[in-house]
Length: 342
Image 1 (tube, helix red, strand yellow):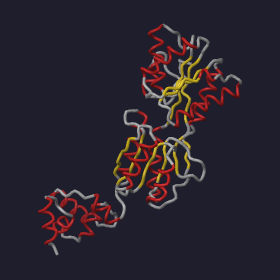
Image 2: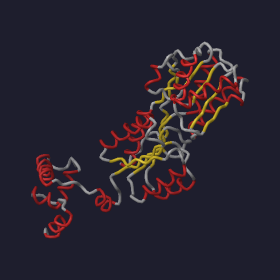
Image 3: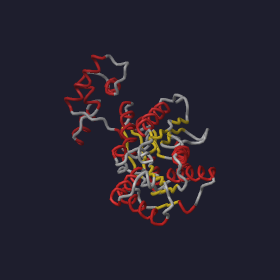
Image 4: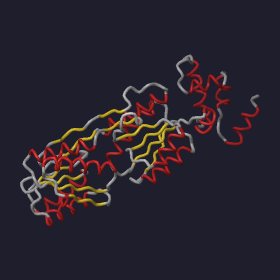
């Protein structure tokens, strides 16, 4: 019975679970449960198995485990960007919760492109992930079809699905943008421009929140809507700030859809000697770490990225345990961080 395991080890150069079980003098089933930290295994026995695994340099084979269980030990986490710090915060929180739950994360980057996300979903499903965490709700019809057919548990992050439309953890992008626009109105601003970059679905929801609020106030002017498909950067924010003031000298506030854009505007204002907020108020979105240290400190919308990642991962773990996650639509809200730039 032991001979095939010995040959396998010699062929691959790797210790097998059978090798660990033999050294620990237990059955392979007991060795497997001990290495999974199964509470039903006697602690002294479990320690003996761990010592045997350490001595042999045994590393579990996730592919073999997935084949045996029809489910892998990894979670696919798809985010739009790895360079955008808000998604880094989200990802760090997700990974910590999933690791504690016994799962590994495999990251996919969609670059804000739904069709690229579709390809990523198809590729990950080939490896039978235990579950998926997706960013946003702008999946293509084919992506939704693939996910539905796979029966893999899915939780969406950073946005809120309609009731009965799946599991999601996030906040209302529309409501957050509307709240910042009302703040600018309350400060007496009447010519409020909006600057959007990247133009992903969440940026467009912020645009709609700004627009609806100004329409309600009778102050909406489509000429104050500045949209650029380029990536959101400090440099782009500075450039657009200067262009807006040159083209629309009556503008008295600019609401940028991302903090890096707004930070660029504040830096350009300093360079040009433009008084913020005396001449023009500047507002951002997401409350990046440097925003409170700008001159003047930037008013912005604080979004709870780490909390969203943590809660979404916990919801997914509950689904994997076949438990009811409680609320399937969790709104973690936002905060207006009112500082000197407005």
